[in-house]
Length: 468
Picture 1: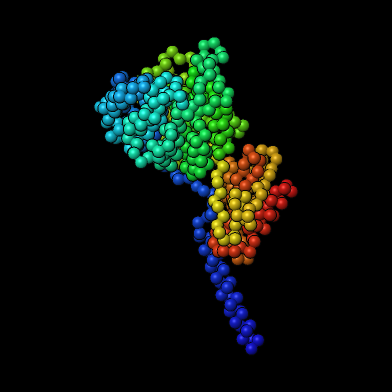
Picture 2: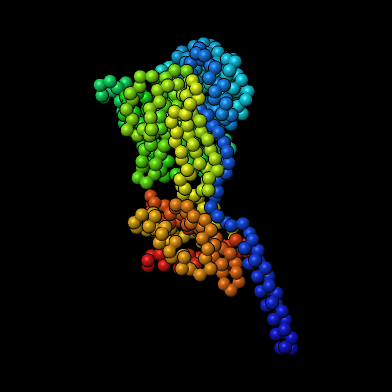
């Protein structure tokens, strides 16, 4: 009897071990449980511009069409119609929409989106006080052929979001909710600073933050009709509302969306600008205007990159696939001869990713989960993010059965092979230079319970990092 029981137990043991080995082999072929990846951008062209007098010749649309853009973005002053007479404004839109060259451009360009500035809002430099802003909004959306059921038609203001390939486009409304401009404090300026004033309004702020925090796009365009980064000139700009400008830059630094670029118009000139926020850099591209430019401009801008463009121009954005995500080549081009006047190239700067949620099964631990039993504290570090990353890589290089499969400036993805049964677990790290912590997620690729393996592994890693 004992012999029969022993044989039965032996057979069961072989079967269980065989099952576990087959499952372990399956884990080696299963897809990794890595970070949330952005949709790829293989090759994509987007064009944009601003400041267009509908009564001026519109023949330049053929030049823009030669780039075969997937989309055209209007950045404001799409017509010049400074009036509270909506019949007149509607006629001004019709003048542009019926221009032969623009009609042909629309027919060959898949997507046309847009924001407004002041002259298509109805009054120069106007804000939330403008009494016919709802009527002007309807005419602008009609001009853009925005569907009647579109979300933008249901809420106050004209802010919108669109996906163009793997690029997320956020069109801000800098008019509908904007507080009053302040009088100048320097000779020669048109406006000064309204220290507590706002531009977007709380509803639009909440929308913008939600769109950025929950985005998995590979690249982001944030369009503002007025300039965001420049602070030197005395005309309309975000710096006239310093609290709002600081809030926007703080949000970008905190969320760090993938490959972000600010777009703006308004100034009848073109330029690239950059502002540094510690280790985080924000870039802006201004393109203006299509039918007229400020040819004698000597406008100061201590954040300018490259030349100041004072001839008629438009913007072209070329996205191509790169080893760590999409790359962007931004070009300011001349209306008259399509010449490249200024360029900026931006690789994907490896902003922190968001780790995938832990599954319902108990084989995962993470610092970015709301499940209490799986929640762990991030690893604190001192010194720079680069030094912390180097320490972590050195520690894991000495760990048996560990393989580094992907790395960026602030992201590491390892596979761990268990022993004696060779399951594959995925372990990821995100180094956050602002909070000075390392987030991690350790999870089994297959199976249900890991008997606490991932939790014990990460406890050892945390302890070893602290002892370094």
